[in-house]
Structures are given as structure tokens and as C-alpha cells.
Length: 467
Image (cartoon, rainbow, N blue to C red; front, side, top):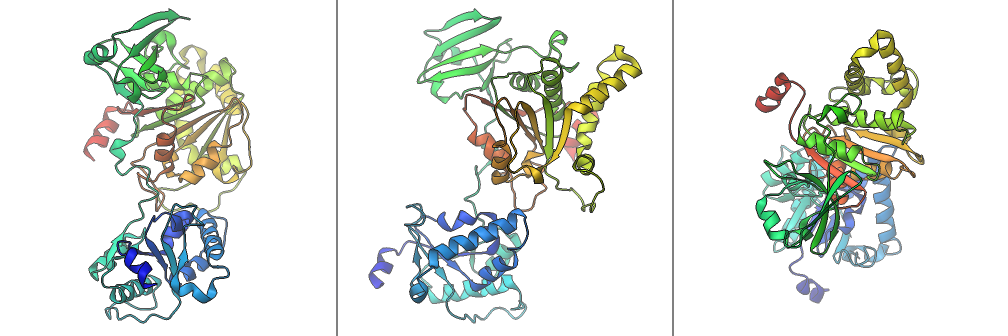
């Protein structure tokens, strides 16, 4: 035992708070060569949170299953810890320790010992005293818990393993500006041709491996806008985009007001792209463009049979309690954004008159279904245009559940603004929207655009800037 300790001198001991396990049950296997310690209070809190059908309760039960699998049959030598290497398939090489004895640590008298958080801090304090030469660190998603630990002179960290990116400024925007120097570096064997009303370019050079499939390119001061359709080693092919800012190409009466909106419409109207994610501040036109594209492809070209719109029901303020009515009616208060955008789309047909507009509104209503996320498991959508609104409030797991509902001929569009997350425990780095943007980057049938400019009104733009 002593020999093993000396060879593993560098490894740290992480004490896990309950909220980490309830956030990510696989966190037990994510600490590489370091050891983990689970206080008895963490297990007690897991037990208190296991009831119900929420994501948290599901994760608490899954964590308990993982721990049971690890310690079954090892009751007599638990004080030596359980090796994690085999169960984690080599991902983690540390050991898992459970609290096997009563720990009475002296905490400041102001901290009541009855509180679960303070008992975990007591365990942390005791372990640091028992192993003064080793780094003992609390891992918790609770900011106040980390502040208390640091105030007592103990180490504490957030759980970072669920973060897709450390810095959301690095998140893929889906757009790249190219300049004259790009053409000089990569245009030695430049080939260009026209086919089916579109222009194509094939370039070779050092910048090509850095391009992603379906990345959108533009050149300032030039009327050049293209989509990357092929990347093979050091060569790439670009396809020209359709200009949706021109009124002759209007989609349900809506034209693109800026470059990013034009890029978004090109992805939304391309039947070869099955997955589109649109990120952007409030008022950049995400929902309006998506609905317009969905209506044209559902009612006019009939590529899809209907539009299905869903969003996470996380209220910004207090919850409004149980609502009467069917699933559609219960979801209605959450779908104010849909109503607002349909009003705009209805106004686009000036010649129709009131009767015509009322008939169009009824036709549109019959083709748009509003569904709750809670009833999505086990469903399959065929030839549907599925819009996931406010997707920044979804966890990566919920996002997977939703996107895997897509059957043949279905297009999935995720809309959101990662600076407006209403779900506790989700941050910009760990949101499901950030997760899918990063994972779908460079897939042949997926595209992404980050919309920059607000087009709502001068008041909304000024408010977004100064408030």
C-alpha cells in the first residue's frame, strides 16, 4: 500500500458534491489519474433526490447504479478504495473512496453542522488535515459552497468536464471572411465553372484543410458569397449562394436584411441540409426566417408535411401553475414568439385583403403543431420541419433525445441565444446548443450561422447595446 502511495504521489484527491453527480452521472469516470472521495452526506442527498421523473432524479438514480456496480462484493476492503480503471475502460486510473468511518471535524461555530453542505465541508477539512501533503479539492457546481470552502482556506473547483468550450468566443460561427490574400495563397490551380444556374470554384492551397463543410464564405467589398461543399486534403470546392436579399427571391414575403440572414436562408432552404443551428441575440430574425422557410417548404413546395415547434418550458419569472386544456393549449402561453412572427408573415400579403388573410392564417395554423418536450421520447418524425426554439435551455442529453427523433426527410432547426440561459446549472459552455454547434461542425448535411445584427427596431438595437 505504501509503495502504491509513493508512486501516485502527484494525484489529487477530489471530494465530490452531490450536484456534480446529479448533473453528470459519468463524472465518476472523468477525473483521469486522480482519486475521488464520496462523503456519506453526498450519498444521503442522492437518496433524497431520486424520486420523480425529472432529469435530476434520473441522474441521481443512474449515479447510484454506477456506485453500486463499483462497490458490490468489495465491502470488506472499501477503505482502500475501488479501482476505476476497469469500469471506466481505461479513462480513469484513480480510485474511488467512500466515507467508511464517522468524521468529526471542527468547523467554525457559525456553520451549523446539521446542514448537508457544511457536513461535506467538514469531511473536506478532515481529509486535508489527514493528508497535509496531498491536494484535497472540493468539486461542486454550487458557487456558495465553493466560496465557503475557500473562506475556510480549502481548495474548491467547478466541474469543467461538461463544458464543450472553455470560452464561448471560440464557438464556431459558421462564417469565414476571405480576402485577396486567400485567393493568392490558394488560387494557383483555380478552376471555376457554372452548372444548374450556380457558380462553382475549386481551389488548392494551405488554407483548405482549415475549412469546414457548409461553412459560409464572403469577401468584403466583393459580391462573393459561397458555401464550402467539399474539402479533400488541400483542395476545396465552393458553391455560390442564392441572393435572398432581392425581392424576387423573397421567402413568404420575407427578404434577408443582412449578410448573415442571407446565409441562414440559404441553409434553411437547402433540402440537402438536414440540421441547421442559428445562434443570435434577440431580434436577429432567427424565428421569423425559420418560420418563413418552413411555411414555403410545407405549403408551397410540399417537401415537408407539417411544421412542429417545441421549446423548453422554463419560465423567466415564477411558474404560472397548472394550465387548463390540451397539450396544444397548455403550450400556447410559451408560444408567444410563434404568434408574433405569424402576425408579421401574415402582413406580407398586402393584396389578399382581410378575408384572404384570415383564410391564410387558418391554413397556416393547421400546418403548425406545437409540442411539449415532455412527450418526445419514443417518437419518430417523418418529413417534418422540426423547430427547437430557445435551445440554449436544453442539456446536451435532452438535445440528443430531441434530434434523434428525426426520421427520413425531416429537417431539424435549433434556435437560441446562449447569453439568455434560464436553466439553473447550465452555462454558456455546457448548454446543449453549444454542444450541437460544436459536434455538428463540418458534417456534410449540417450547417450553422451566428447572426450578428439585430433587425427588430432601432429601440431594441439600442437597448441591446446600452442596457
